[in-house]
Length: 164
Ligand code: GDP
Ligand code: MG
Image (tube, rainbow, N blue to C red):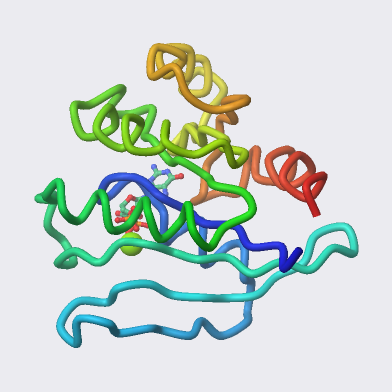
């Protein structure tokens, strides 16, 4: 196995913030498929002696919350094809949204391991709000994390690298 982690989810949940944390000071490789929007980035990292490649998906216009069904399918199918483990990121500040449900419906097509990452759980109180994401009916487990301050990311990686 090539130990590939893909991060998927709707715009602004914090995918790129987690990606940057997972690759540390290393450089990301951009793959500009459309030539207009940044389609995906690849980076490398390691955790407890295990090396991985992480893919930050999200080929939509930066700063926009708009995303279309075609984009969701493209992003998720890329993750399903390339990844060994998929991180489906949601946002505890926003709760479950219609777009999260659309992502979940596409992700249901794969039997690859999926973890729901409930981001922006900057405080314990915020972390407790992760419970509502069980309603999405997807993923082996839900991990509350803060991509910004790093809390919960170690527990998540401990679980993810078990597949490597
Ligand atoms: P992406 O569109 O999913 O790649 O999301 P970004 O990584 O670009 O983050 C979107 C916004 O959420 C930015 O303003 C980030 O600073 C913010 N953000 C990301 N992670 C966290 C977090 O753990 N906590 C909080 N409070 N904000 C975050
Ligand atoms: Mg991004």
